[in-house]
Every structure is written in structure tokens, then in C-alpha cells.
Amino acid sequence: MAATKQTTSKHQATADTRTIKAVKPNPHKEGSSRYKAFEAAAAAKTVADYLATGHKAKYIERWRKSGHIEVAGQQAAPATPPAKKSGKPAKAPAKKQATKPAAKKATR
Image (cartoon, rainbow, N blue to C red; front, side, top):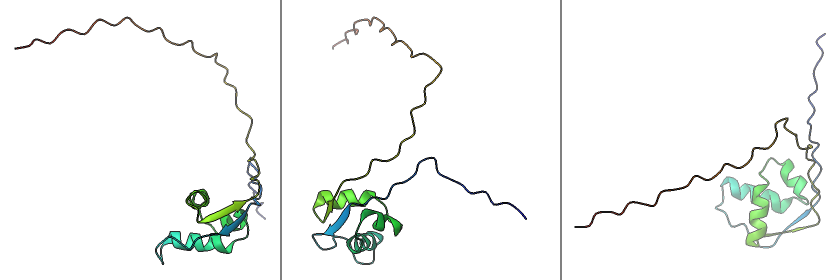
């Protein structure tokens, strides 16, 4: 029997429990992928439900800013890995070189 390897993410995604409410009608052309995404957002109760349908999260903020949806609740802070420290010391800023004054153009 071959052992199956289970992959685990270093970053555990937390469920986004902010609620979505459609305020204005769908602004996109019927049949387009954005139309379907907006309909999925309007039908979803939370942002996590919307994302589970496979649509992009960037549209939530765009529709919120344009006033088509309202998003209520607090967004959970994403789990971020600790910052890596490099073994090298920081470089000192380079010294500015003196510049020569620009030569005057000859006029006719």
C-alpha cells in the first residue's frame, strides 16, 4: 500500500463571517462571469460562503465601494507568518556624487 501524503498549509485560513447584503441590482451584463459572481454574492449570507463558490474576493470590495452591496461585521485578521531575518546587516545608503552643472546650449 502506498501512503498518501497530506499537504497542510502554513497559513490556516479563517472563515470570513462578514455578512453580505445586495443593495442595488446587478450592474453587469447578463451572462458574463461578473454577473454570475455578483449573483453568487447576493445569494451568499457571508463572505466565506461567496468565496466557497470559487469567485474572487477582490470584487466584494469593489461592489462595496460602488454601493451595490453592504458588508457588515469584522474581518478576521489573516494569519501571517513571522518575518524572516536575513543574516546580512543592512546596507548604508550610498553617498550622492557631486553633479556638474549642465552645459549651456549654443543658440543661433
